[in-house]
Image (tube, rainbow, N blue to C red; front, side, top):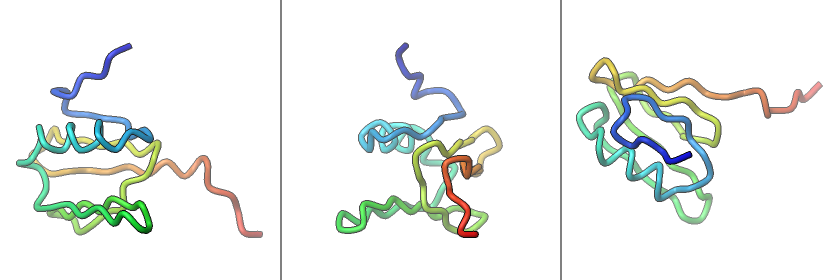
Length: 79
């Protein structure tokens, strides 16, 4: 299945080039982004603050601002 980069929603995978492509097509919904190559983290600054984008996150640009929903299903409990 091919990805629709024009779509207003996107589910993040491990392909950085695809994430950056989607962000480049939705520049009106965020202020800036920063990629740290050492820690391999992508941080996006938008109207609601800043988010570190991780695999499995759901990105939404439908309302003119970037809305992120983090996928915590893979996170382990520290109990």
